[in-house]
Each structure stands twice: as C-alpha cells, then as structure tokens.
Image 1 (cartoon, rainbow, N blue to C red):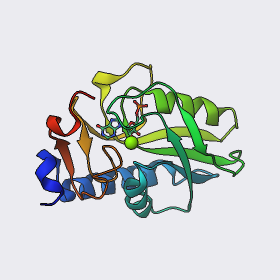
Image 2 (cartoon, rainbow, N blue to C red):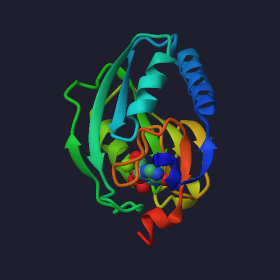
Image 3 (cartoon, rainbow, N blue to C red):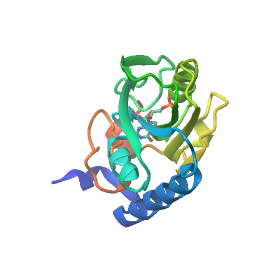
Length: 184
Ligand code: IMP
Ligand code: MG
C-alpha cells in the first residue's frame, strides 16, 4: 500500500494549499511592489522546498532565491532546542528585503535562532513567511509576519513536511496516525 495508509485524516487538500499559496504570493507582491531593494527569499531546507517553489512563482516581482539548511529535530517529533547550521547563504544581505520561507513555526527554536543570525548581517528588512503556524507549542516569543494556516497541535506531514524524512512527497497535508511515530 502507498503512503495514505499512515494518514489519519487530510487537513488541507492540494487545492486548498494551492489557493492559499496564491493568496500569500499576491499579498507579498502588493506589499513589496514599491520597495527600492530587491526581495531575497530564503528557504529553510528541507521542509519548505515545495512551499518555496510554489510561493516564489506566486510573487510577481523580481526575487532572488537562496537556501539555508538547519536541523533541530533528529528523527523525533519534538524540537531539541539545539539548532545547527548545515548550509548558510553566501550572499551579502545588505540591500535586500529578506523573507524567510519556512514550512512550519512550532516551538520557535529554529526561527528565533535564524532571525537573530540574519539580522546581524543588516538586511534592508527581514520578515518571516511560514505556511503553517502551530502556536500551542511555542516556547520562544516569536511571531511570523505572513502565515498560511494556523494548525492544531498534531503532527502533520506532506507538501514538504516530513516525519523521519518520509512523507514529504504527499501532495496534501495529512495528520499522521500516532501509531506511526509511537511515543516519540
Ligand atoms: P521549531 O524549531 O520547533 O519551530 O521547529 C521547526 C521545524 O520543525 C519545522 O521547520 C519542521 O521541519 C519541524 N516540524 C515542526 N512541527 C512539525 C510537524 O507537525 N510536521 C513536520 N515537521 C514539523
Ligand atoms: Mg523537518
């Protein structure tokens, strides 16, 4: 059997994701269209790779694209609180409006670390665009500027989001059956 056997329920269909990403792209286009400096979209790998691909195509302005790779999770479903930079961006951020493109804002450990790191490099501005926000689990005082969906406290997979590196290729967002990850 395929991936669907591990999914308890579908939280957002492909169509719902598509619509919301188009709205976010339109909103960003509107808000950045008169700015002098260019947008730099910084995707936080790996979970945001699909969101980045779709969001960037929904923005009707010149943008640059770059990627960072960080890890804070291991193979469990909970953040360790330790953030490790595995791949940094090489571009000088001065003169760019940085938009961090993230899959999900959960404990906030990853983004509060990243935002401090990037701020020091003096971009023209820096904002966070996250597809999902799970505010119930926050341990750091951090808010996203652009949010696709606010989600309940359940472990979700698909559209780039993984459990133990799997399910990223599910085209929709599903809630994983708890027995799949046990007491992790
Ligand atoms: P934070 O540091 O706890 O905010 O975690 C952020 C990262 O944890 C995200 O970029 C995801 O990669 C991962 N994450 C948090 N919640 C989920 C989830 O429900 N499904 C899949 N990955 C998640
Ligand atoms: Mg992940």
